[in-house]
Length: 75
Image 1 (spheres, rainbow, N blue to C red):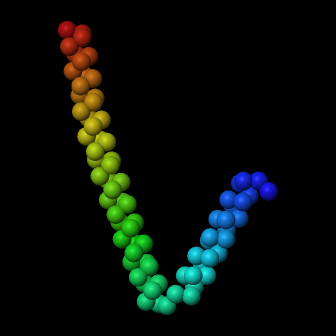
Image 2 (cartoon, rainbow, N blue to C red):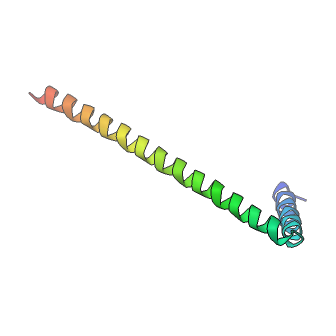
Image 3 (cartoon, helix red, strand yellow):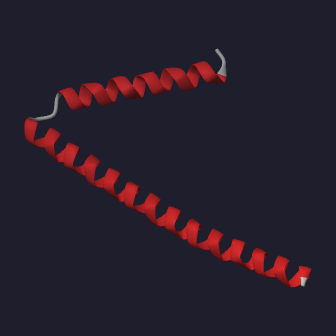
């Protein structure tokens, strides 16, 4: 059996176990799990926005430096 097939089987088994585990949770536990997943999703989204803003700032600084260098070289 190839490595890819083993990984696929492990992934399938993990998914089946997670489904079984979720199916057997109480309604309160399901709600806590949903809230936790939403919180993690919001944190990931916030981190992505922060990274985008940082990259935009750095790109703007870099492009400004390139423009200045080009203008100085052509004068």
